Length: 274
Image (cartoon, rainbow, N blue to C red; front, top):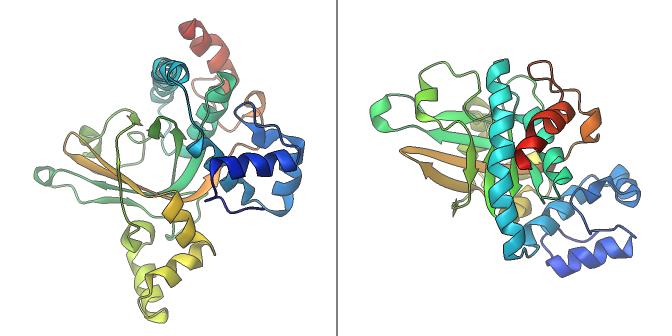
């Protein structure tokens, strides 16, 4: 393994050394990639580093600009019809696989999300903590689809308790962001954080390393991103890279209005892309 923070050329050489072909999106399905991943899941970080650092020409970027909104809006319409909430992981995995079918590079991120609402709304800041009470696969999940830094289809369809939806966009396809710092308050639930601060002498780096040994290095490369949509501020803090472990046709964890992602792609999305 080589560090994920190494250059694109180094990542490319690493994959070539292990006979992993990198000529199309989704090469984490390569049998040689899977062999390494079996003993070292962190290789997904290298895949994300490859996608993040790769150079894309104008024609490719134009294709992404044209296709991504169509794909995202269609998926979101089906999510809305289905009235399913909290489907960020399934939606991200489905979108990622569909984008790969269209030869669009992307990678999935899991992490924390902090939403700061306009002061006049009277709504308290909403946190999706990575370290929290209860059991869940991830606090939140989204995609990076160069040149889009944050692509989130489920932001509005979460189980909110106040009138948060009034201040949220239907989908987020964000290109312009500001790199931010990691704040423990964004990542860890207050009571748990209080305890961790006591036993770790308020050492931020040490507390972050409890999430993952390389978490501090990870967040320096896969940085927290912050931006404003109208008067609502969003802060996305990555804590890990994810990927669907089955192909699009085998994604059955998500079913919207009676349709699996493969059906939605074939019957609804592809005709629009033509």
